[in-house]
Image 1 (cartoon, helix red, strand yellow):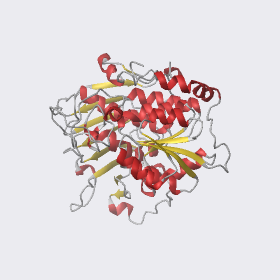
Image 2 (cartoon, rainbow, N blue to C red):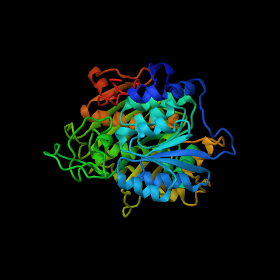
Image 3 (cartoon, rainbow, N blue to C red):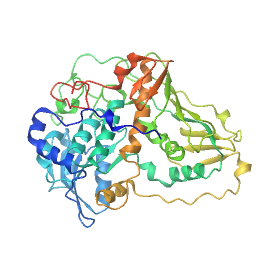
Image 4 (cartoon, one colour):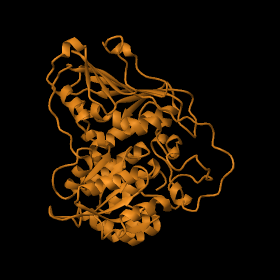
Length: 453
């Protein structure tokens, strides 16, 4: 894995106007005392805040609670209905509609936060929490842009806090077994891989007009760092934001962080060398109906050559089943990866056990016995000084950068973008570099994170 110099993070202090004024002292302490936390003893209970408590946030809240070592003392959501549901479960938790207010008022009371909000708000919340010395569990994709992923990774490393990205299948026996099989050499050195997911979120242009904002929703805070736009019923909130480029990361951002994960783990991949995306002409508002993205990575001790190619497909596109020496009646799963080695082929369905081909060669193969771990409890334990979180930002940052570079390629269909990861630039198409960042809406800028911060 390539080493990325901390020098890339040229100016990473938290500087949101009113928020900084009231939390600068705490942020300064976090700079000088990395990993500052109330839970500094293995016998302590984690004092935690949940930011985003609807949808996946509700699942995250309950999963973090289930281990029994966490007190959720504050909850936040821009949707009052989500907040009310969480408050019924946690009547003593302090309630907020604005994550900035939560971090301002709870900075000396909490050890950690989880960020379970739409993609465009992941980085500003997580970066702000890390800058205050808080441990962070953040949903995937880690960030909305490549630059945010790099800066958040560096900030977490500098603060020495415990982090985890929400790719819970990373801890499941299915993906862990697949990685172990590959690393033990069952299918030989790896020549290439192909991953796919059949979903698509294509859309037309932005709908005209506007609808009344529901009474329970704070639309301004839902928009957050993104450019303001009118509210429309059933278009953005809940869930459908994933297909809009201002808010979501498309199918690749949503699923590649899961589906690429066991390949990254097995091959010990880091930053890619190049990316080329094929698909319909770019729409500035929404993601394409289909996408094929080709990546080249530096080789590792598990690869057949000095470089290795991986290809992503989504929508109507998927790899050919002819890549797999399987019986004629067999079909590829709806999502997953084909990993091609010198001695065999693995088909790894999304969230199911690996299949090895040709069948006759691997009949009776003694698979490694690998146990699942609890992804959430692993993070909680690490926050309390016990063990390490496996999907920390040093691992999930480059994984997210890869997915978002693939999405960046939508703007340059068919063109190879050469990526200089250590120097953080696309070297052969200079105009592509502006897509590594984004501007934050006025009043929401964060120095060292947004283009205009």
